[in-house]
Each structure stands twice: as C-alpha cells, then as structure tokens.
Figure 1: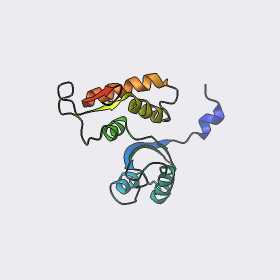
Figure 2: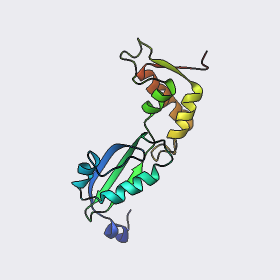
Figure 3: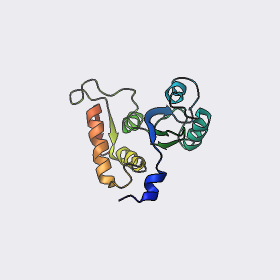
Figure 4: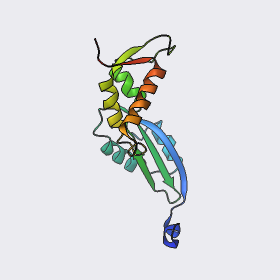
Length: 155
C-alpha cells in the first residue's frame, strides 16, 4: 500500500506516447515535433537526451521509445531495443518477410542468431526477468510467423 507521502508526490500523467524513432535521429522536425509538441514537451531536451541514450546503436536503427508526459510539462522516457522482426530481417538478409508464411520460405537463420537476438532483447525493461530460453522460443515463433526457417547450422 502506498504511503501518504508517495500519494502526495505523484505527478499526474498527461499522456503516454509510444513512438519508433531512428537511433540518434531525433529531430524537432515532423513527425516527432508535432507528436510531442501538443503535450508541451521540451523538444530540444528530449532530442538531446534521446540521441545521447541511443549512441550505442548504429545510426538509423529503429528504436522504440515510450514517453510519459506529466501535467507540469515534464517528461520521462524509456528506450527499448529494436524489434525482434528488425533483428531477424537483418540476420536473414531480407527486406520483407514471406507473403505466405508456412508455405513460402523467405530465408533462414541459425540458432546462434536466435540466441544473440534473445540476449539483446533480455536487456529490455519488460524482458529482464524472463529466462533466456523463453525469449529464444518467442524469437523462433516470430521467425516462423515471418516465413524465416530456423536451422542448426547454415550449409
């Protein structure tokens, strides 16, 4: 149960915004500017902080971000790693998944690729307490739904 002090110090949330922004590519120009400007977010501060936090990724890597804005015009944000589908497409060397998964195979990846993707995704805030095996199973299921076959070794 929350204490009285915690209840009194909570800031009322104005909005929660989920966006996908290229790593190191946050600019005040559209589409980011209008999306955050309507909530009176300090765009320059957000862009500077976001670009600093996403330095470890290659430029133009699509990174998910969840921005929580508060009534007092302050904000907090959480940066997530790129999506599993993006990693799978890069590992398989394709631009799109199969148009008919289960019937037409788009490409193949190895279990080593799956393990590496799972290790990266385990650093996400919502996956950090999940076992690596469960994340690997989820990556394999995503690969299957994209028409990407998972093999032990590439021939």
